[in-house]
Length: 393
Image (cartoon, rainbow, N blue to C red; front, side, top):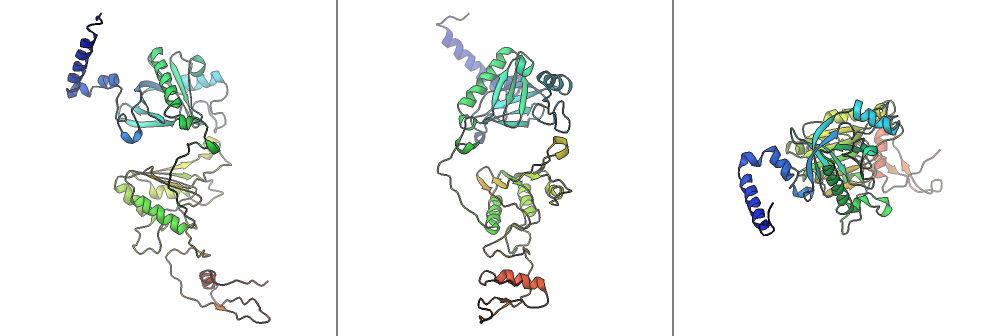
């Protein structure tokens, strides 16, 4: 035992011992030292927020994949037969336990595979976040169940004391640094209101796609795209005076070669009903730095009458484009609102004459030339801004 008078000296000796230990690389990088200090490659990344609690836990596999874990049939059961069947199927039959390095940040938490340092999963603190322990929730005395609006996770700690420490830390973060996301917000939003946020309005596809292309060109770290339909070969800026430089697939390939991480989520259509061919878009774009995810898997997850209709582009988590314009064919438009999107094809000029106002035709109108109806329609689209179209039955 150390006397009260000698406590300061013992603290100083322990501090010097730890500093000297960390100066020796073989000890500093030893996994036991890392576990003792609770540090990892995610600890001091400034963009991810302050360092929180970290440590090794044992995670139940499959517990983060609703609709695909445990007892499931075409997405209809989803482990919801009963409480005990849920525990029996996922905990004893259909799942394993694996070591994972768990880390907690100010608004999210995740886990790393210790063997290679890869982040295997991330969960957000949201309005559905809950943490519970005990036999009823986890089937164990020193286990934790973590829930949010999209998934669940069950972990097991080495001792009941460790389980209590993790639970207290999760509750503290949820009630303090993540409070803006775990408490109800105005208009039922998942995020709190932000002050002094610059916003611009883009009405037509021409200005929207040009702005998206410029933002992608400035990307340094990541690009996230969510679309109902995405056409890889669409030209984002027109006319294409620089060849394929501003074509969507060329932009993404160029940024991927620069090291930018690109993540694309597409609606996985029912092929018999829709011809948007998300599989082609995925195969055309997917590469080492371009990850394409199609969702949902209709038959396996039991999802039929539902579709992704998000139109989102987010660059470096700094600039975001939201609204109703997909990066696909048929969406590019300008203030002239032509009837047909012909890309860069130049059509021969076809004269469309206006009728003179007469007693039999007081409103005037258009004289459509005979012959090529497509050319006439194109010219009609070009002229429709200034002319009044009259249709006769």
